[in-house]
Image: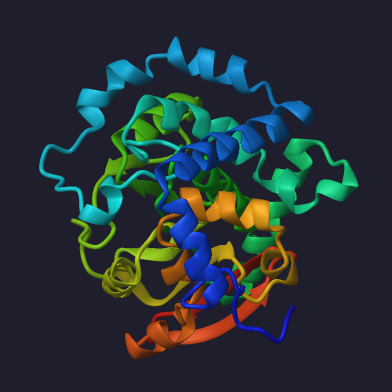
Length: 317
């Protein structure tokens, strides 16, 4: 951990403003977008993840046929969700983003422990496991209902569900994945081959249709850095409404205080910022203070690995 609260390349610092100016130049942005995607693909393929094969398998799957039944026609997409990100002009609202999200997510852990030559599935297990273990002591003794907000293609959702099932000797749990992209949810449903997850729901995290006090555990995994601050606060407020008293809210994401994050080479932090339009907002956002102001019982912030942090809060009894 660094004594600095955030990287110099984020926020209103001179370096950050220079990087933002460069990215806003169209030729530079197009180059950065292409390079960012290639870095992820190359990382995956060098570590045994069959990127193209995975995408082709999903292309041939029933995912596209599921889109009409998964799509909620009443959803109005907020402006922040309609900007290009993750190297896709349509953001998460396209099949390419949804199909590539599976191998991209699988490669996430590899970049964390890239010096250890871990198989991708071992790195993935370590990445998820560190979050679960930090969240566990603050969780209710018996967990009946779980919500994974911003669940994407459901990898985080299934791992979370399995962890709590094992924790309480397979006592029944109803787990729901919520996301704003019906494309991602179609892939989540197709890849949930054993139907472990009760529902995959297309909807806004800021304004769900769940009743008050519905969930024992709610998570936001690797989503917060993709949101502007006002959206994050609105989601926190909604989480507090639908979380049961004594329930736990867990957030895992990039750690602004991480020396690894702060010392990324210029080429890498430029690639990151070019595909993450809300980076400046995220890296300067006091998440813990926001949770306290909204009435949560803030519990802890722990570096869950050398790139990420876990933030835990509970709803007062």
